[in-house]
Length: 111
Image 1 (cartoon, rainbow, N blue to C red):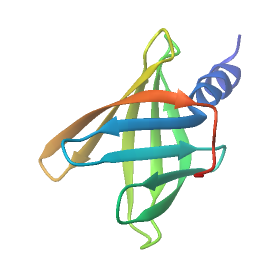
Image 2 (tube, rainbow, N blue to C red):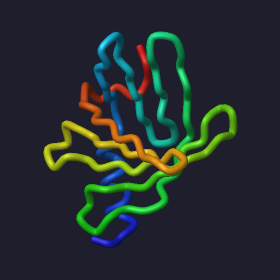
Image 3 (spheres, rainbow, N blue to C red):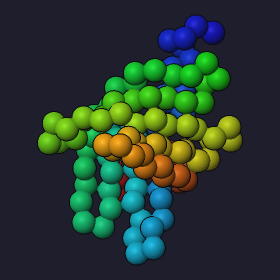
């Protein structure tokens, strides 16, 4: 399998509805082929994304997202081998933030 096909296969495993449960609320990601829609209690933020790279083991992606405010940043995404969780790492200034998302269902649009 060539590198482009591996990236497409990995990207397709991102598609769907993901959630992280916080103490006071939940945050949801709805991921389709072009956009990550983040939904929480007070806002909906669509972020266009572009796949920049994937790892040789087929479980890691580096994507660049652009917010509605034209702010862009990279996200490093690691998909669990069972496909039921996603670890996201974002570099912010001199630190990084890591979040673990759980797969909910195949919905790519918020209800």
